[in-house]
Amino acid sequence: MIQKKICLLGGFGVGKTSLVSRYVHSIFSDKYLTTLGVKIEKKAVTVEEKSVELIIWDLHGDDEFQKVNMSYLRGASGYLLVADGTRRHSIDTALMLHEAARRSIGNVPFILVVNKVDLADSWEIDPTALEHFGVPVVRTSAKSGEHVEDTFAALARAMSA
Amino acid sequence: MSDDLLKSLIPALDIAAFERRDDGSFGSIAPVPPWFTRLVADPAFPFLGHILEEANRFWLAGRPGVYEWGPVAEVDEAGAEFHYKVAAVTTAEARFLIFQLDRASDQIRRVMQTVRSRQLEVEQTGDASAARHAALRAVRIAADHVQEALGRVRGLGSEVTANRAVAELSASSEALLNAVRAADRPTGQSRA
Picture 1 (cartoon, rainbow over the protein chains, first blue to last red):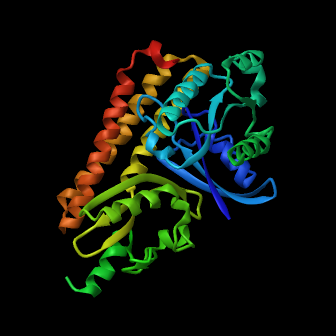
Picture 2 (picture 1 turned 135 degrees about the vertical axis):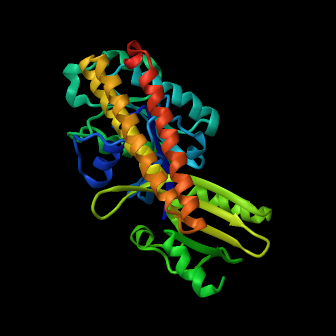
């Protein structure tokens, strides 16, 4: 079976681990549990009639105490940049990590994931403005599962193209 | 030290140690500790991905030394998170792949959890004084860890215990510094 490595990048508390839990285990918890280092999960999928095992690297959130070590990205075929729609600055963090990732591993497929669409009333980001970032964007909810499966599937397809 | 002693010592230190054979396979050099048995079913360690590729390059270079990765977070059967580190080792005689529980990272995570949880609350409520309260609480937690480790240093029985205590003290002091930085941050910066 072909293996493809995916990384999740973003600030702390944006829902990276929750997205992976929703996608891999179909579970969600409201309790925030911070990640230190990296969590590695696997999921077997079918991409264009080929069996692929996604190796999902859920990296710790980036902030002033814990900078993401870009060496974690080595060997990645693609990545998800995760932001929290209720915290505007998390988009800036995600885009900053995108630049760092591109410098580290070059141009590989990625998607900007703006999470917590279930809290759309509290968003600090105008959803219509997302299109202006010039990168592929999707709105998700790890809580409800909205667009979570689609997002990983879209990235897997882009990585296999 | 006899082989039998070594085989009892390695799992006692929560280490899973494998010799990397010339054909690329791995052979355990001592019984693996229970945490590792739960974690890894495939002895080819496919989940390591590029880590193994880098380890292979390191081993093929042939220079004696240690190359480390991690921490890697995992969840035990009770749902509690723990951390481990991975190291490739080259000696004059052989090449090894080592997995070791990383309790120091467990401690750092507890402090980071406190600081970040409260920072999220602050961002949601705009209550800047809560950030300082959270940071001070994190300082207290880290200080407790230092006190615990110091207690173990005072009752040292072996060099191994000493090394562990020193590692825990180092982690706790790093956590203390982080927490102090958070406490010193002007309240206006709590909302980035």
